[in-house]
Image (cartoon, rainbow, N blue to C red; front, side, top):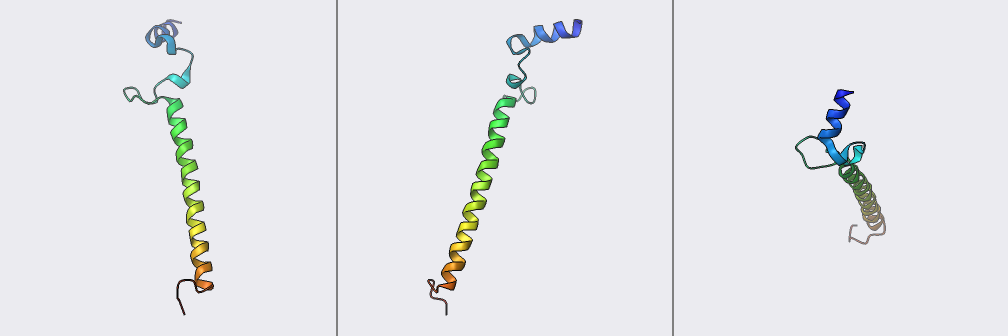
Length: 71
């Protein structure tokens, strides 16, 4: 029980709320913020993959329809 009390005294208002704790001690990024950036990065990656696939389809369709002046 002594360790629990010491940890509670040390953390103060953050005790019992793991999402507000820092991910790495000394680095001012909380677990909640790291989850947000992970989700943002994954979503952005899928959007970029979709855009690249769409560009690939347009370029190949344009080549097939001879839009680019290819003979």
